[in-house]
Length: 368
Image 1 (cartoon, one colour):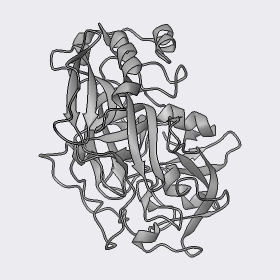
Image 2: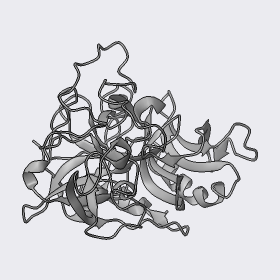
Image 3: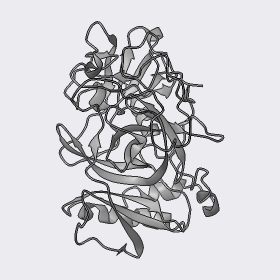
């Protein structure tokens, strides 16, 4: 029940019928209320499911092969507790927890998503998978997301600390003093806590041929420390101050969604989302579950994250897409930021709630 009462005080009531129509379902807690959490609205049984999930998650994660839990919806709209496992056949898992139905999903292990070591090369910029089936591929962008881009650099392209392979520039963000930063993950810009403030940040990333100082666009300004000792993490995020503010734009390459909005929204069941990333380009998906607690594999160890957003299908992201900004796909909230992509498995993508990220650094999205 560690977060339940905050949720109850700030919950927004929305009809369950809306949740089942494909529009943003089950409105979540407002941006300023509980920025560290992805939360469900006042649909029947959701608050109870969250309470039960949180009370049982510590013991569930002690079961060998269990990698996480979350709250989702069945096809009939009933809330369920999801248990994520590495492999089929994990024994001893319940069908119900305190009267709440349980759904076991085999996700495989969940890992961060920088570009894995291997042969450098392309792979982005073609509007890849993740729910875009039936659509024609957009034209080639003016900047290959896996290569060096002319300045100003668009968002959604290769970047990183010189010691990592490559991730993605999520967004251009600004603080109250007008300073301009690139937003990405800790593991992209701070090398899993191993970097020092002031270290170079390059575009493209090392994997894609970037070198320092020739390809510097800024320096590491701040990062959220990652806890690998068993404590709860809420975000994997970092910002790099841009040396010449004009060197970073605020839109994706031309075959992407364009410029994100400055106003954010909180994730909701069934919300249609999209992102533009270094490896898979622009992809589309849906929020499948909220309030996820997941164990995520890093080079430095395993980190436990709470209050996360789960997006499907698996093709929504791939290695190298870490740091991508996730925005609403359509409707009145189109292009409003929802989350910061950082991890995944072949089955799903995991994202930090964007409000928690922005609040950590005291910045806002520099968008429309």
